[in-house]
Length: 327
Ligand code: NAP
Ligand code: GDP
Image (cartoon, rainbow, N blue to C red; front, side):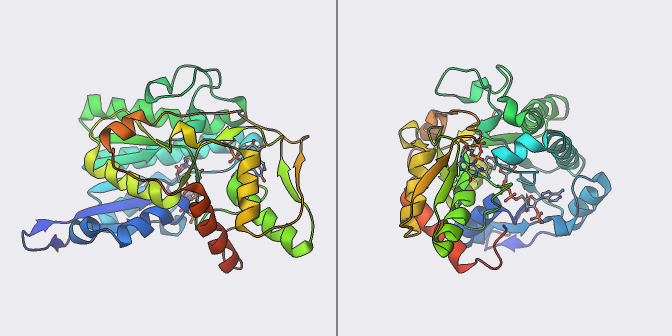
């Protein structure tokens, strides 16, 4: 049974976060630990794969029966950077389809009041006009490098509308840009660009070698700090009432090149060696510039952490937690 909150005796929301131990889960956790409304009115459960493999329906049902969530933030996914997506398209498709199908169907069966799932700007069409907005998710094929992941993720948006129409479910989704922060997966081979470069920079500094950036460094990305995304996902759960997705991103003016991001990391890590570009490696999608007008309209006062500040936090965290960080 959910605890009651404060003097009005209203039951607390039971918010279950799937994939709650990952990068975004860590961001949500850091945000809610210092948020008054969360303390007073919400109880949080952060799941990892140790609580059950949610590719499996029976294990997923057991989790829902155990925690009886009133609200679900669905983050669990097979996640990886460009190079992992290029290599394992089938696994990215199949595992994410299974995970998403099980979570959505359990939210229907166990009458969850609200489900917020996570898409990504890399699922948008490759050939598109810029900036990308929420209406464009299905307007053409995604970039070929991550088509397994992208098509699986797109189905969340399709099913959100189907579940609402057929069963009246209150499901929605958010579309974050590239994310970084403390608690990331710093794998060089399978991770995303910023954690991969932080790890490579750490090693290059130790060994007195060059920092190798893959590709030309010219692609452009918008990066959001995981605690900012955590705050915005909780805002979405409490205040955003549409079935259609909402882009959670820094502005178009904050887009940076991979080369500039690498320089920021070198500076945050006090790395004084050479930064070199391995141009035989893939650049992936050139850009996926997203428009955050809908977010600004609905949540005009939100202040993003400047990227230099967020990167300093992420780099410090990685150096201090080198032995135990995921890598
Ligand atoms: P992450 O750090 O890789 O964490 C993934 C989480 O999912 C972990 O808690 C993991 O648990 C859990 N998980 C994975 N497979 C599972 C399974 N079969 N059963 C149960 N739990 C499982 O991922 P993230 O970067 O936080 O991503 C969160 C969401 O944001 C994902 O939906 C992703 O698609 C989306 N997103 C990420 C980015 C990005 O740049 N990282 C960008 C856009 C969107 P264990 O740790 O126990 O394995
Ligand atoms: P994406 O944003 O979905 O394409 O995924 P990533 O986070 O993996 O970013 C890929 C971009 O960063 C591409 O342009 C890569 O060429 C470039 N990049 C440069 N160095 C690295 C690295 O060490 N790891 C990764 N994953 N990408 C890198």
